Length: 355
Image 1 (cartoon, rainbow, N blue to C red):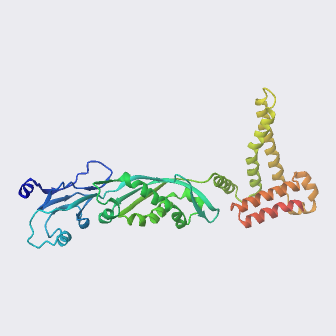
Image 2 (tube, rainbow, N blue to C red):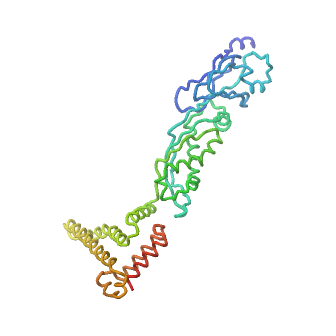
């Protein structure tokens, strides 16, 4: 019976893997009780690696090329099996092939907002997504840590784990970049570079190399987007107080017109008239306020000191309006849009109107 079993055995002369489809990271050569012929050839193609495993213990690792399997080319396996130099018989061993080419366009993203700490706004919630590419860099480590003795291990099976590694390092990447939260959306390349640096070590721990990271979108919370819009508006008008007041007036006109239109549309069939009235009232208010503020800011400080009451009446700036404007400026300062120096200068300029 033993002789018949020996005769039925097939001795494998050529070991190779042609990768029948994309997405396979590790593949075990099907031995099916057969043995490898001593002196046989192992073909490892470019973007591949091969690993010999003896009784669960990783032995020799082969890079791309054609290798003749002898005790000279299998030194670790020779040691594990206690072969002497005269060994020339067929032998049994598990052989695993690994794809070492880049696995590209793998997606990552925040299913839920990630809370991060920002120096300007404290704790904020961030949404972001992009893609990344990686490859198997250490087949021996990847075999022992991830793929194991399975006949096949695919990219899809690993995606969830790698996506989690990317997301857990977002906070580290933001902190390392030194980029203010409001400026992240305009610095996606630097943010991606920092995210790659923060995550690469976790990939290396399982035998992978993180080759690239791209950030396609960063979403700011709605309340911070409004602050960003105000900051952009302030950047357009600079430190000119007159322009700042005109900017605030322009911001208020649509809301005023909307309210006036709603009031005018109360009567049946009067919605068009109400719209026109609302729009006209809004434009008229904006023009009046702009003219009054422009006239007030052109007056000299001496005129304001000597004729405070007549000036207030002529220009139409009331004390409660000045105080309301100062409160708005204080709110902008608390949000970081105005510096302490800018707030103090604008406040002093407004208080002169009350002298």
